[in-house]
Length: 64
Picture 1: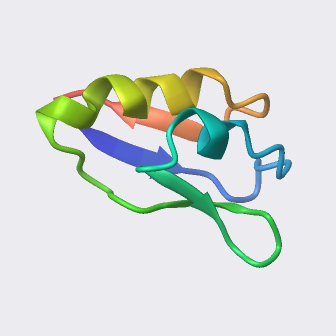
Picture 2: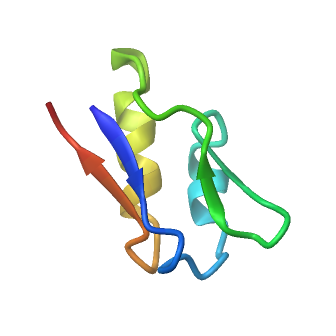
């Protein structure tokens, strides 16, 4: 699994961070950043959860 981000789509809502703070954060401008690009299997659900709640679709999960 890989976490793919499109910073240009990010609207700085922060829902990914509130749902999965171990995987997502925001930079000084509020744009999403991935703390982990390739999560461990135990983190897969959290990665998906963060992507699902993104109102702008700025997070895409690439499944292996």
